[in-house]
Image 1: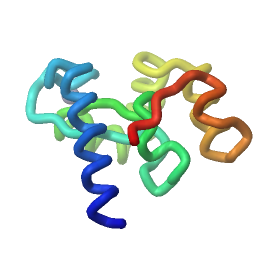
Image 2: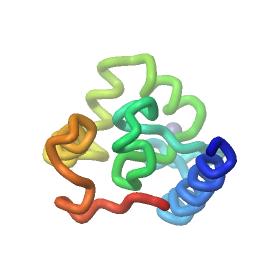
Image 3: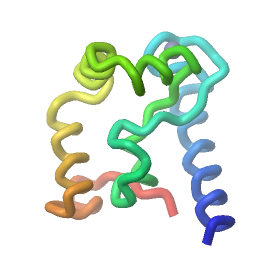
Length: 105
Ligand SMILES: [Zn+2]
């Protein structure tokens, strides 16, 4: 199971690298890794492409620890509607397919 999840995370990271051209989606720096909008503990949105951003180390740390920065990034890069939809999926109120979001298998 753990091995399977690791392969899934690698596929997700590959798609993110392509989407972002390996640059931070907030500031444009390199040296990035995937950051979950809805935290990764939530299984329903863990592998949903729309729930991830590709961040440099600095932006990732700020996103996870600074509420104001987090809210700014969500409003600029994600948008309220998409964020609300992700929350619906997390709570089980909507399926991923309802919004045509992409779940990486
Ligand atoms: Zn950055």
